[in-house]
Length: 144
Image (cartoon, one colour):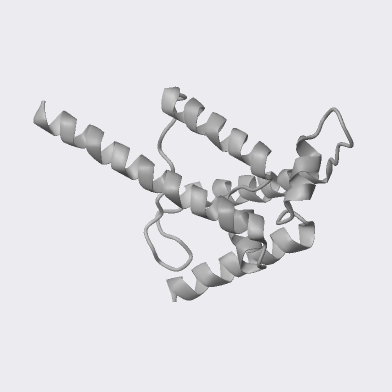
């Protein structure tokens, strides 16, 4: 049952991205083009998502199990560190260059967008390199 609801949530998210135009990199790049023909519609989509998320997290924090009876795993990190800032910068640079972030890129990939193929391949390669790097650091720490 949890898998069904995960698929349902993903489908709703994907449909929302398509309907709002956020799976179109030109729309995202239009939002990021402050000096040109700025398109503020992404700000409204983000604002709506933040509003829904704020209510959902407020509700979720009061629970120990999900509505499906699964253990709640809420984020616990509260520190802003170099890794967070560096990751945010890399994410922002990639978003600004390609006009994609991971969710919309996967939706665009499903829609057959060729730019999404390149983006998703680069994203997966970056995730793989990060995993290798983390394992290397963990091995050094364990041997020290």
